[in-house]
Image (cartoon, rainbow, N blue to C red; front, side, top):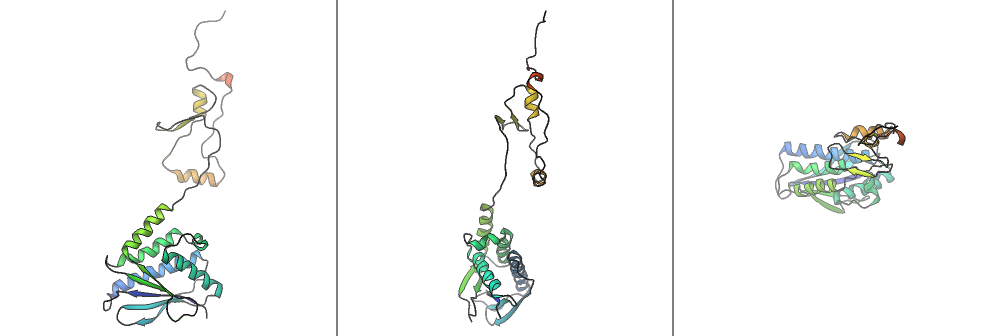
Length: 228
């Protein structure tokens, strides 16, 4: 039966491991594997631990009852996360939070410790590739996620002048005078999510005001004298 399977090797070169430490590592590993399954839209089958070894703590994490396609997809996704590869097509399916959770596994080990994770291919008796997870590698994952953050937005319209030094940024349209400037002003706030929610609903992010016709705009200098 097809299965996704990895092998964990903890406390290499030492004898045994504190039970609480083992429980914490197992919990974060299970969380990571569950999040990866969610990214790939796999069914909610449980991961089981088996094939324990003596000496350094070694055991397999196995997820059974998956079809061949899901097995291949899972192996590709695991390889992407474990190796830090972000260029393959499968990486687009993996959330940054899932990669961060993989790094979180290392928070339970000492600075000089290594968690070795082996990845099984189809039907192999032993892992075909091994990956090391350390606290240093976990920090690198966090930094890579920060660099990969992307922001998307859109601005429509014509901006003739923008006063960036102002506490409340304003833009001035081609019309002149204080009224035209006020009509095209847009306050900058410290809570962009509300604007994003309005944009998602198709609503304007900047409340619009009617721009007065040119003949109604008075010069800021005013008029002097009288007419006869």
